[in-house]
Length: 172
Image (cartoon, rainbow, N blue to C red; front, top):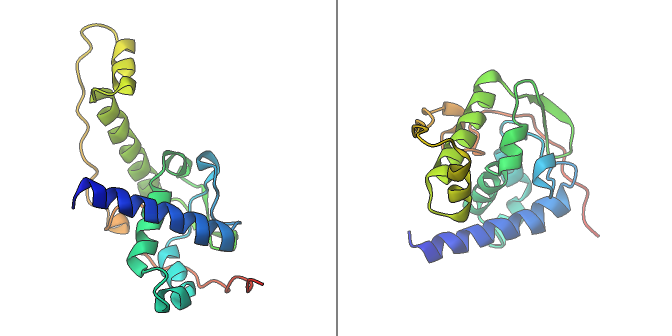
């Protein structure tokens, strides 16, 4: 896929989150990254089920919704909030389980991988990080996260079953 196509997908994912998720489920989806709570396992299926009328009209696809969830749950703030024992929430903002140790470890590995990638980049941020390291500090490679069946399609695309949600109130 070309860089332009990836950029177009990212813009579409952002628009989906802004137009659908923030508007329809404000107790679940939070604009400020640092305040994003972990979402319920299986929320992708609930979201697709509740957005089926929009899917049927061609306004959005199931793949678009999954991609938007990956974008949302892949944010640094979201991943930082995925700590062991943290409450997960459903689309209505109700508690729906907790983050397990393996899920918290996965989130931390993703964050560590991103920090290492940034530190090794030639970007201004990467140069700044390297300038703070003492001279002669060896470079440490991080391993890619091992395959985690709960995140089979990347962070945010959770394959576990979740609770069924009530439909959001009809918009007037």
